[in-house]
Length: 292
Image (tube, rainbow, N blue to C red; front, top):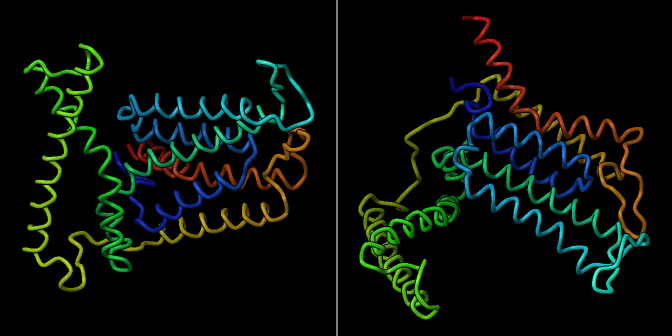
């Protein structure tokens, strides 16, 4: 059953992901970011995006670990020296800052992973084609470009492996030569399809007038409620951020991690915003079970 957040109008869906990614960059507090990472991970599991992650998940975690490890190695700011590595001080503040940046990056990557599955190409074009037709199309094609080339490169490698051309064996020179041959085939294939796409778009009259959509979305009452909820929670988080809530002071000296006073309100609004899709999906699932 597909219901709840996934069936909303593209406007509240885009507002949600824009708000989550914005706050993941503004609210640099490990408690906030760790909560968001757990909730976004649960959301990816709920929509079964995890089944498609595979190697991407490994890349995400590699990026996060690299940010966490590299920052203390290159930044030695801070008052509390934890230990020395190769005669270089590793400070508690630099470790905490590396953890914060890693969590922020992982939150945005996990959000984008579910964004690709929820805000599909027809939804994205419906939302932005009227305002910026060429830009929306170029953005969509760019987002599709990397996974498409990756899939094609695997197909080419499988075919060329039957002819003895592979990157898995041989000397460095032989593997470099094989890689250049694979890239040459990939480039030729991509350019040929680009010309065919351009001819097809010209034949269909692209750019001759206002763009029409083959699927229309109407704003219903629950869509407006979702827009209001996202806007309200985002406003609370931004106002709190202006007053200094939701940010851990790391340099020059690390402050305590625990939340105090009005910061709990900031935390509640942020967690509620990130958990909005889970709440809507859970409500629809419970309603479906009760009706059965």
